Image 1 (cartoon, rainbow, N blue to C red):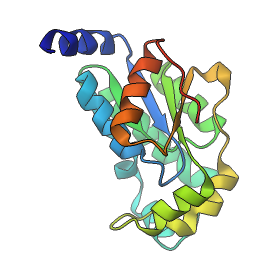
Image 2: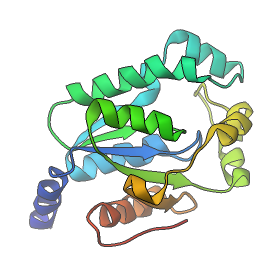
Image 3: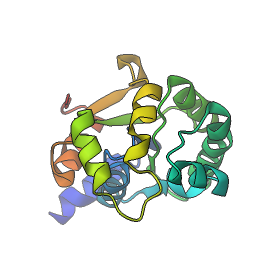
Image 4: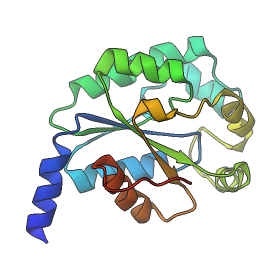
Length: 183
């Protein structure tokens, strides 16, 4: 098992950046942190790079605008570039293609792990979420803003109905070309 783990970490070092994306409530942080641990990489939590103003807007159930998001995305890119070692696993909603293009322009190419599920399932998760500024009141604005990644974006599609450890296993297989996981 140690040999397999070392081999996986060695393979993981070949993927410089991996973006775990999706709307609020899809489990980005859980999946990205577990993936980083599995690959021996670095975990970047985009949420910690929001301005106080952005956090307060979201706490009040007000969706962010493009102008709210650009400085945040720049901070996320800076954090990813400053991370030591590889791979760097970024948990970030990156809802629009233009946001992902912005990140690519700043940090280079990356693989996308797209977490998706039904609005009903995600709404239920958000309704039970505690101690997070992004609540169910943001679901509609997140869905309206979302531009799912296209096939041309080097994406692995992941279904959030699965347990996080299963999602991570499928993600790893997808990253290294062993599987595709449509949800």
